[in-house]
Length: 161
Length: 161
DNA sequence: CGGCTTCTTTTGACTGAATCAAAACAAGCC
DNA sequence: GGCTTGTTTTGATTCAGTCAAAAGAAGCCG
Image (cartoon, rainbow over all chains, first blue to last red; front, side, top):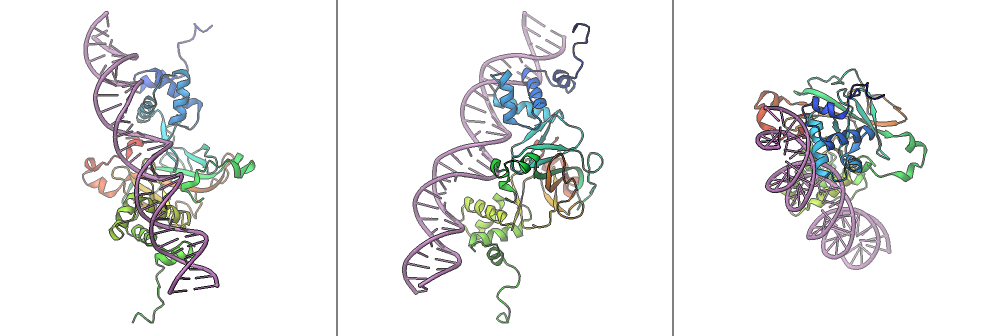
């Protein structure tokens, strides 16, 4: 029943890589799978995940791959204040992020105003603006209702506290 | 001619500190003076500046002071992606920043929409949003006109490149 | 003024995140 | 199958920032 189908219908990691002119390697494919599984993963989370299927992968390899994929426009790297970099597969739309000041969970938010370089200021004080990046800070549902005071992995060290 | 004036008219560092319930020390005052002189200073720039007048000050002291002042709401700390933290005295209005992707210079931008927690999404996906932080990325006047290709301290390692 | 308590600062070690560099290895092309 | 170029490993290194203990100063109280 599988033989009548073209080998790959869903654009799997391999073809995305090839399309970007990158060699297809296990680590790269596994990093992409990890990112698909973990919405806003840090390098370390990706590393842990990749090692489940490729136990010999080095941390450096993961950094390389994430760097390569970012440079190729296949993943996007965000870096909220006070946190290590996070990676996501959703690229191309310049969407934004809400981050819980209590537990650090990150969620996507669609672009606040219109399309990509949203938020118009096009030439502020001599600058030609290419992109506007918005980070919302607040409390997620869980932290609001549940054990508010407990969880606190203290993300807010750099924010008001 | 000076005796008829109240001791301090302009709200100097000392009184700001006292008002915040912090002890007045040389390092704290000098850090505030440094921040007034350098618009978006990194911890290191502050350290260098403070040591011009207090040559024995330790780096740790500067970190302590910056932390204390930030916690007291006297300074604001921002941390653009791919850069170390920057500090500024302008607090209270939630203003935003434009950063040159070529040379890294930072400039202030007034709040995009209305007052402080600007950009309305107040309950996105279960989040209660307290604050929106906007970072604009673009090219500053100098980098646009002048020796564009040269300067590049490569800030953009984490951005598209 | 002198002493005391508490807050600051110094010193120096240490962490986490990420980068650099050279050698070993594998993809993809002929 | 062999070669070239791009990847991955290994291990050291940087940078920004934090931790902790001991020494020192600010501000209060009598």
